[in-house]
Length: 488
Ligand code: ZN
Ligand code: CU
Image (cartoon, rainbow, N blue to C red):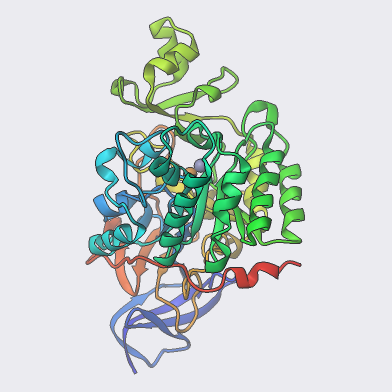
């Protein structure tokens, strides 16, 4: 048999949370054809892995890459980390289905200006992704705030029955077109007024499609356990799996509570498929939120529409220069984005290490001075947390970014190195892999990512994009709700 590609002498970490084993991998027509001792095989292209690790391409489970996959389809911040699939539409905000009357409401502005929202139906977005052919595969959630912006004249109240019916219809139409599920961002002012019942009713659409519910909780501060309860209640009612987005203990008054959060997650997991994602940093980032302005920890400004020259500076320094209070300074900067150094490292590590957590970057690609997670999240888990700190073995790190995620999100034939699966692959050096992006210089590619293949085609190597982009839109696979009783 002659193959398209043969990768020799690799240490295969297959995504299933088991230690690596040496093998050759043969790829043909975009798929993994054979795994084993193929020393006699021939191929058009051959790569000697020299004992380095070959893993499934990483799945970035939490992104805001909705519009950037179309506008900057090279996707260098992601492909350079070994990411081959991004899940978009998180935190209640999605590029589709959206018909805006004016400017996008906060935080939909994280996805771009009004000009970026040109997908009134989910199927329009899906077609645009396929036409743009980004370097990475794209799967998408539908955002609750996006639906609200289509049907409510005022986002600061709960939806009325007719509005809920209209939102349900748009959600159903999107699920029919391949959306993974529904996301909410209940902490944001644009969704905070939505009562639980509004979300419960929308979520009733999910089960028929085997779709799931993901949520940026109503609070990540002191009431976080109550917010988790609300999320589980919605999932149970809808008979749909739940993923808590970027689980954390936010705010100094909340530090040290991660064991409580994780035990609540475990308890819910006994009767219902629930999980969470997290990013490997003790600082968060989003739009500049007056409720989060504090002198208890550092806050830096990442962008500001009226004051673009302040991006990268500390809120405290700007306030001193302007001779204003922190709050008035923040008001003057708005609309703006920020990094909040508001987590405790021990909480971050406990959540990262938990078997129910998946890795997502939550990177903000529009940001002129982004949180370094945009370029560094995945190599940071492999290098800093797994290799250097020994928080978990390398195969567990890989599992949290591949097999676990593909199973949770029903991404068909992805996330494992297995014969017949799509050849989304990353070759990396386990000794050298590390994140280079930091809070001072956040836009730098990782080291040690030596080759990335998307659907069987080499897409990144030697620090650069390679060849033709090969990503495609990934519709929801069958059967998430079939696993609904898996934990009972
Ligand atoms: Zn969020
Ligand atoms: Cu997010």
